[in-house]
Length: 231
Image 1 (cartoon, rainbow, N blue to C red):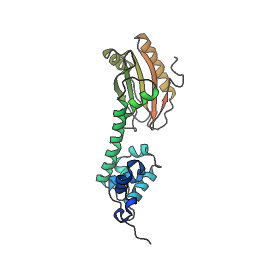
Image 2 (cartoon, rainbow, N blue to C red):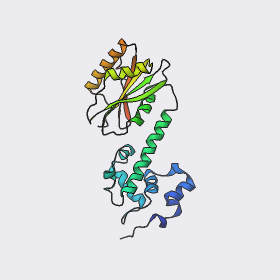
Image 3 (cartoon, rainbow, N blue to C red):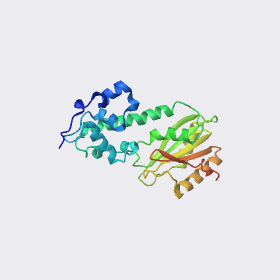
Image 4 (cartoon, helix red, strand yellow):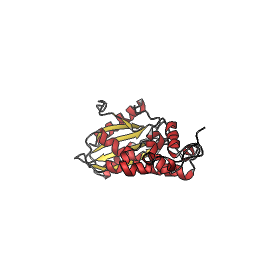
């Protein structure tokens, strides 16, 4: 049986840190980037091999990886609390960076803009969150607000609170958003009925409900893009 080599014993070009310094961060695989975070492997696997094993457990899906808990990560031999927290912190920074980028432009032009603004607020994909993006008459974002969060299958959205906030912000339009913890962004019949109810309420107050964006696993379904806002 071949004895496992530590990363320090690898050829310089194969070591993640040296590889990044020599060739840049873009050439590193996801496993190599995680290996830099954890620093070492276990008695059987190098840091890169252990990182590959962690990625294999989530089918190499970084979104699924970001949803793992501390307890999930420490199930891997060689990953203690400190390493698990390091991985979780790095993934959280990635989410926040995306949120910072989303906040750069003020005008909301399409469903992708709405999706990018909502995504950073959905910090726990295990629960449903209902969000509202408030806009002025130029379609510039005024505020994103989490109206409520619920269980794994439904969330309550109070129309009175939604439109009270819209009036206090002098918003002329709103965009609705919520997530599906299942990862499937397709709307349910309840989602359609709620959207219809809020569109009707908005018409009474002269506040346009432009879209409803349903998010699952960083994918989204836009009611407007699918021609479903003609209630």
